[in-house]
Image 1: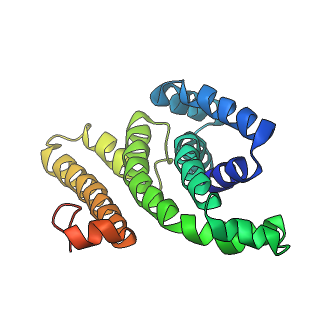
Image 2: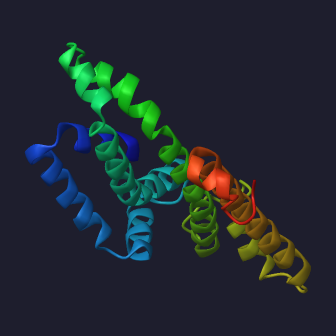
Image 3: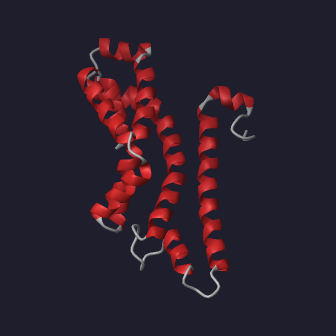
Length: 193
């Protein structure tokens, strides 16, 4: 969703770009917690509703970054050369723009995965997430409060959530390091080489 919004906004430009970016600005002006809780209260608990709500929430900020990457790719001479040779809009986007924006999209997806894990855990803990028969770290944490000795199960659930979030962040750092030659030569991204 974010890719479609960001690439189309940057590529088409003009009034469409301005309109889309103002809608993105309006969407991003609301606090994320209020938006996600409102969406889940309106849609109800469930896996499909949770995926939809988290996608809508994350699409705005990711589309802004993808739009910026697309603008920098469109400014390259090879895109203008493809236009001059008669390539259509779809061909330019699929063959010249998306492959050059793909690294940014993958990095955003890996960074966003950790955020989604934490958001899902928080929503399930509050009762707005995945219904109880299905496993969820937030649901497990919420269920462990009623036990006589909740410490071992809540500690392991929190540890698993933290490990998953940190792992996705490390993967994002590694992807960023591999996608940028300047970072690769310096050995940036927390010591990864």
